[in-house]
Image (tube, rainbow, N blue to C red; front, side, top):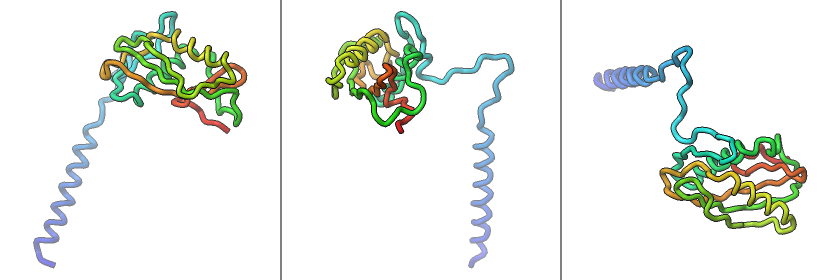
Length: 168
């Protein structure tokens, strides 16, 4: 082993340690007592109310927007969300495409898999989505078509696949 190899080893080790110190010093400053917590960029809310939400979504893909849409629906329908893990057999399962324009308004609903054995559930899902308009505006996407699966319990409560707590 030449004399330069141990020096190189210690130099690399020293540089790695220095880099680790610099990275560890880059932590966020602790919050100032009494100040309001800063909100992350992207979706703020959900904002329940008669007219839905006027918030914005920073989602860069329909898949990312799906979580914003599900969160919005949960915020407006908190009393209708099935709490906990769903039972093994559900009353209905439906898969719906929802088209949202640049302002967050619902412009189209398309069933990918309709629970035709439960037309009342189909009507209720459509009504729930339309009443939740406006959704978070997809500012980065312009407009968006996202898909979510509705897991419907016989009690009339539901979960969305995006935010489900699982199934037994």
